[in-house]
Image (cartoon, rainbow, N blue to C red; front, side, top):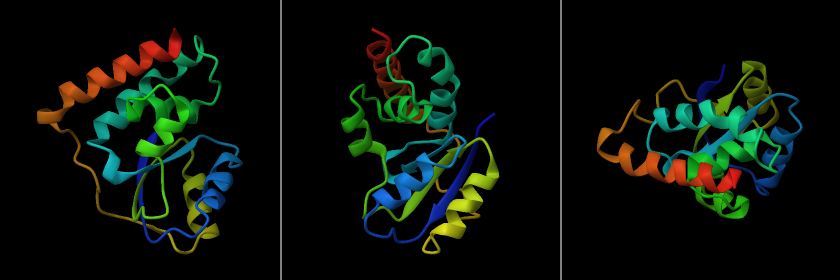
Length: 144
C-alpha cells in the first residue's frame, strides 16, 4: 500500500542527485512537484493502476509508470517535465511504500523538510473529470 507524504525546501543543484538517490532507495518512492498536481486522489488513482499497467507495457519501472499516469503523458521525458521535480520546486509530494525511504531522503538532503501540512487537497471535484480522462488516455497509450 502506498502512502502520501510531503516535503518542502529548496532543492540542491543538480536535482539529479535527489533523483539518483531515490532510484537507488531499494523501495518504491516517487517525487512530484506539487504545483503540477491537483489532488491526493490523483496520486491514489494512478497508484492503483501501476501493477496492471506494468504487465502490459515495456516500461518496467513502477515509478516511471506512475509519473506517466499522474502527468497524463505517455512519453517519459514529457512526464518528467510536467510532474517531476525541478530546481525551482519548493513543495514536493511523495508516494512511497516504506516510510524509511522518505526519512532517509530527508536525512541525506538536509535542505528538505517533512511538511506536516497537507500540500494538496484531498479531492478537486471541479477538475477531476478532465484529469482522470487524461490519465486514462495515458494508460491506454502506455499499454498499446
